[in-house]
Length: 106
Image (cartoon, rainbow, N blue to C red; front, top):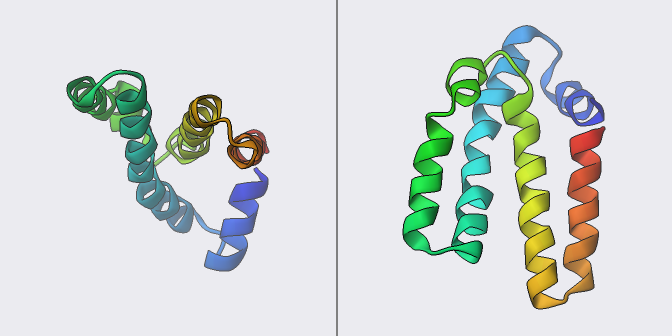
């Protein structure tokens, strides 16, 4: 909730602002989903994974009214950076994983 508070402090605190915030940040989660699937599998599986994610019922039905899509950006990005840190052996990526996970949990 800390992340939502910080963003609504700058953009205003009403339902319409939160709805637009969720709608504009939800598509950002497509980037780490594709990168994660491409790192683990290949390009075709990554494209199929994007298609499945786009028709997932909670993404289609609840994007504008629920915070799931907003926090999914931090969750999926932290998982991607975790796998990238394991593969590349960079400590800074492990720290970035922890920071994104903290934003997800707050």
